Image (cartoon, one colour):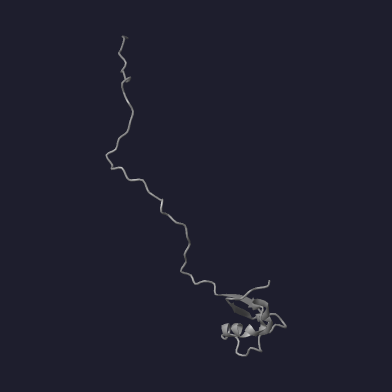
Length: 102
């Protein structure tokens, strides 16, 4: 066997090139955080009537004013026809503006 000359790769340089246009870098400088929703705001909370409750007692509990019983009655006309006849287990809507003392 003779002295076969080995290939000489000593002058080879590595690199990559592309013909694709370079894209500009994304600029997030004006991004602002925030949350929006199209869902209606929670306008009411609920209260389950217990034995001995009256609309006045419930109004006093949530609003601090027994005279606001009519707000609760108006919000629940779909299930209360007589404000003096509420039953334990009924779930009443309490309109906003209520201040719970729980």
